[in-house]
Amino acid sequence: MEPAEAEFLAEKELVTIVPNFSLDRIHLIGGDLGPFNPGLPVEVPVWLAINLKQRQKCRLIPPEWMDVEKLEEIRDQERKEDTFTPMPSPYYMELTKLLLNYASDNIPKADEIRTLVKDTWDTRIAKLRLSADSFVRQQEAHAKLDNLTLMEINTTGTFLTQALNHMYKLRTNLQPGESAHSQDF
Amino acid sequence: MSEAYFPVGPGLGLEENFLSLDDILMSQEKLPGRAESTLPPLTFALGQGVSTGDSIPEGSKLEIPLWLAKGLYESKRRIISVELPKIYKEAWRTVFSADASVVDLHKMGPYYYRFGSQLLNFDNPENPEIAQTILQTFISRFRRIMDSSQNAYNEDASALVARLDELERALFRAGQKELNDFQCWEKGQASQITASSLVQNYGKRKFTDMDG
Image (tube, rainbow over all chains, first blue to last red; front, side):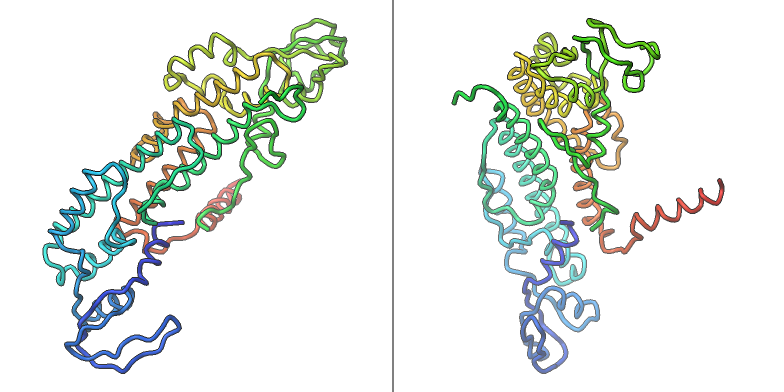
């Protein structure tokens, strides 16, 4: 999977916008959206929010977690714990990038948010590396990785699965095959 | 999706993958052995050094390619005997257990893991140790490959891969692709539509055809 595909999936997430036009409820395959009334907040998918924002048809209200104080708390928690902490959204990285790129004027302290999310991301990736290494070193058979997001799995997925594949095959070498004379275990 | 074609991966282990180009190349690697009975002339397989037309006398030393050795080797009939290449011998196994990450696996035979797995086809008393060493070597070199492949962005990677075996190079490339894809997305280049690598290569191909 490519990052662009993960981003595509993230665009299905709902955000709140305040439109400045009026439109009746619209019926789409994915569900009904609207009605849109000027000044009344309404929930729409990210792809629509970005489109409306680009045409200056709405004002975006950032998700609750996209706030400097909350993100600082998440970052500190992430640094303190050895395991992965739950993220406020399964698409936090993608949403941060999308919303900050297209609607940074509606999000207070956009630059700080960008840095905080990036810090959290870096901490998590470092943790992922560390646990992958100890997983391989101890030749474990399975691991549980809770609270990882799609984008994070994506950065190391192919590499890790390929390496584990090799390792599995090298390990089956240790056991004598059917043709060998003795199997004493 | 993003690849022009999907190459068949090498079969790592006792069995080679019949359709894998990597495994075909690997089966050309030679290993030291000895003729246990008089053999017909095999110049085509053994290359120079063996005089043409003569049959090979019993007991002469040979450098046999893996594919031929696998065919001729049979523990009952003793047509040839096979020795371990020196990198899989006791002395080198000690080196690997001391610190595997300093060894230049590319120089020592670019198919260390796969060739080593193939050697297990020949009944050798040291087989369990060989298998164990290969596995441990992979494990101890894993961290370095992971870190270097996922951190070297926009760098000349030739120094990093110089000491890697072919299997590790494939892993390195997988890591680099993931890193590049992610950086590309982060910089916003992923949303730009580019020509498929297949189309680009097609253009190049035609140009050289016209020249020649």
